[in-house]
Picture 1 (cartoon, rainbow, N blue to C red):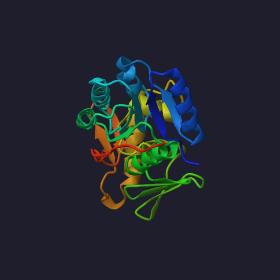
Picture 2 (tube, helix red, strand yellow; picture 1 turned 45 degrees about the vertical axis):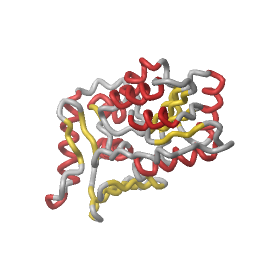
Picture 3 (cartoon, rainbow, N blue to C red; picture 1 turned 135 degrees about the horizontal axis):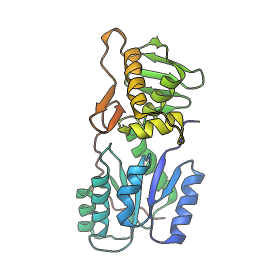
Length: 245
């Protein structure tokens, strides 16, 4: 199995939170519980996330403010937002779209529809992972066999280089900091210097860029590295009027 898609779930009602978390985990997602609205930026910065699911039931500007908070915090790659709302006022839904929401689902709704919308967005924004083979930007990694190819040509990597490439490919389009790469590859307790990450990335680039092919690894100055282009912004149809359960 490929890695689980990670969802940050904001739901003030603890009963609904537990129910939604249970259902999402049963469907194979990794769920991170969001704290207070003011903690969203910190949680987004600290986690490897694929999507934010915001549940909002009160009328007013609160939903749009949450969306803007996610967008402000999302400085290292595009993070899609789905809003689940009990508010049926069209102006407020349009305000949420303008603030950065990708999709809005109005209560009452069915669980299968919510799951379908999550998967539809992740198919566009998450890496193209199929089974144990990852294909991104002309690079193909067979995790089970431990092989890598670039445009059909075999690439020989060390174990550390393979781990770094796998981490970047599983987070394609997202900038990963040196600290995040070090933790993912060497472990949380590693004493490896951050400079070692730069050295390994340089070697990995040299092996991947066969015959002067374009560099698939981007350096983001003072932040870290990313593989592939940043994911584009997706917008849903603002005329969405929800679904009945």
